[in-house]
Length: 217
Length: 88
Ligand SMILES: [Zn+2]
Image 1 (cartoon, each protein chain N blue to C red):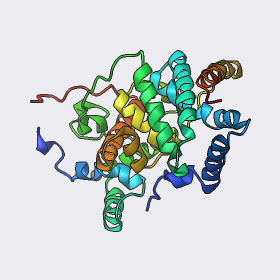
Image 2 (cartoon, rainbow over the protein chains, first blue to last red):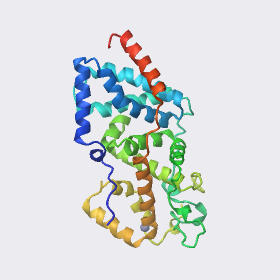
Image 3 (cartoon, chains in turn orange, purple):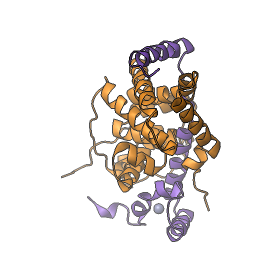
Image 4 (cartoon, helix red, strand yellow):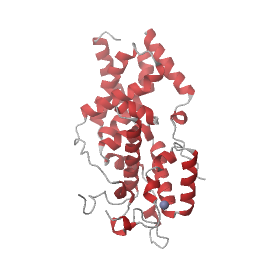
């Protein structure tokens, strides 16, 4: 029995974290003098790193941070449900990323699930088995000696995949929260997440990028 | 599509469920069936292992950081705008 990856929002966000969110929200709504600094300290690094990974450049990430701080802080005073803060904040961050992105637009490329699972098309099977006699055993494992490798792989994903991976696996939102942030159904979010993970896995395995299926159509 | 390419097992059927499996998001019955399949199918076992590594890498990736001076500059611009709007 292989235990499931502990990827629940509960694991990422314990009750103490939620309590801190609520305290900051209360400070903002009371108009405490240090409320803005506390708000920035708590959410600034999170917003910036998301913006940098999503947009792929620091200039856009700074714009996303600035605009998000302004918009979220302005509206925090009227937010009723403290537990909705995170999902609501992520929705604003995601929208800012969409608006400020200077990079190429979403290519909207649909990737066949078999392509994502096949390290090499020539093999004729959906997944290649690691060859025990292969000279390079690294070829069939996820190689992460270099952190930049993961960041680069993320940048190379289509934006629709990148955003869902960032929300779910980097930031630890639940599938339900991700669906709310992106304005899609939960089943849709799960399918898209799975494809995004497979696409990232493929990039990390060092295989060639997916190509159009042979004889498609 | 050539369905004869992988006649040995119904791997693709399982592969569609692996994210939910790794997230602990499948029912007990399906969980046991996937466990049983993985125990016998090296290809799916490998797919699960590498998919799990991929998810773990994301979960543990350190945040790219912002220089303190860079952060101060952005925060000051946001603060000025909030002052201008009468929020601060
Ligand atoms: Zn299998």
